[in-house]
Amino acid sequence: FFMLLGKLFQQKTYSFLSFERDYKSYFPIAVTKINRDGREEATQVYEVEKGDRLLIRNQELIPVDGILISENAYIDYSFVTGEEVPIVKKSGDKIFAGGKQIGKVIEMEVLHSVSQSYLTQLWSNEVFQKKTNLKYKTITDTVSRYFTPALLLLAFVSFGYWIFIDTNTAFNVFTAILIVACPCALALTAPFTLGNVLRIMGNKKLYLKNATVIEQMAKVNTIVFDKTGTITSNKKSAIAYDGTPLLEKEIGKIKNVLRASNHPLSRRLYDFLPVMDLLEIREFEEITGKGIRAIVANREIRLGSATFVGLTKTEKSKQTNVHVSIDSVYKGKFTFDNQYREGLEKLFARLSRKYSLTVLSGDNEG
Image (tube, rainbow, N blue to C red; front, side, top):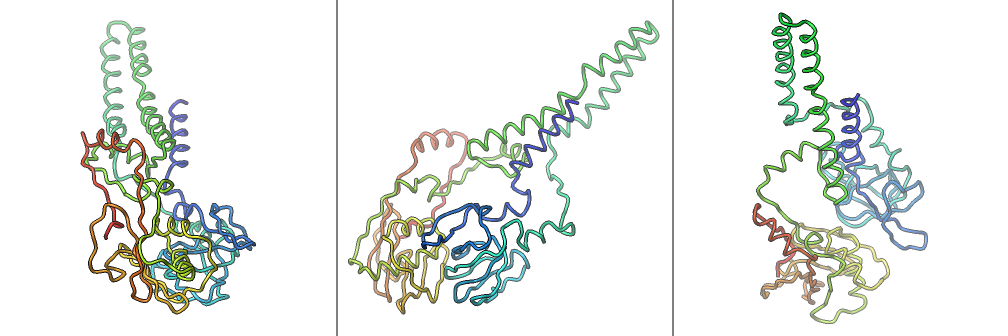
């Protein structure tokens, strides 16, 4: 009974915290919904209903089936079909969940909720179900292989010894060994311990792919931190502009370009700039590690690193900068005064005693 109880606890815990449950693991947690008054707000993807209007930015995954409202879109369906060439869609065309928007920001009207999309039905098809086998064997499985035969051997040897001396004692010894050395405790140790560790880490917002990772963590010797939004606090970052004063129309064009980007710095700068009218973006290109190039109202806007916008001479800075150029004319830069999270020095001091620490950052050029 207790062994079955332990297995049930293990299955419930793993299914709740597993990252490979089903299709839901691959969809974004939240999407941008456009309300009837034109306001944009983040909403959970599973709260999206038929008739809602969604905003899909560059490199974002389309979570539901819908109708394209924007003039055109370039959608990468490699996640679903394996085909790398983006498909061109025009206004009024039907677009399916699982595609990734490439280029400018688009708007779409929802036809089905996430659970009713074509991709969900495809994922749930029995043809695509596969059994998953753990690559690594747990310590419990290894020990149990030898524990049971050894236990039975000891019980029979003891029984054989006492049977010639005292029959009653022989049966008592035999049953006592089987009861006392029952592998219930051993069988319950792994599911209860690993399940509890997953629960504790989940409460601390540290999510592991599965319970096998817990054992592998003991072999970790290097920890890599992402900079933006991980060791720095987005809410505490002050933004300042240094350069040629920007006209209101220029700020509007910059804001519209940022609206199409999903980069953390773009989102923070977008929220920082004042509300502006929406403008159509003709060309949009976002190069990882460099910046954004777009055509808005026949003006070329570049946002990103100093070299990307055409600035050849720059001074080294410990702060994060986003440089701006309009029609190949350098305008200035937005400086992010990063505020690091509280207690970071103590954390690094403790971790550095045992691990090699590394910070990844690609937004500090210039």
